[in-house]
Image (tube, rainbow, N blue to C red; front, side):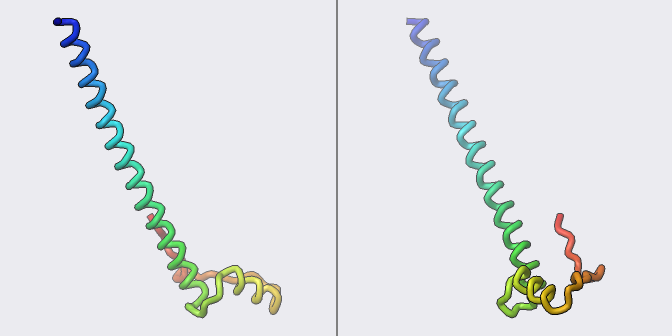
Length: 84
């Protein structure tokens, strides 16, 4: 009987460990999702700022500018955004 109770206790501990591990995995996935969302929003804001809100993507604008004047776009210090 004591052996059975010890075995049940060990299974109970294992189940509690599994629940804690599952909760940590859920929290880690949520944190990663929020970080990816933040990075995506920053990226989209940079694209919007670069394109001037006219609907063209940065690549389309850069391609059209390169075709017109064949000079690289100069970015001033005030146009840079630092994301931490």
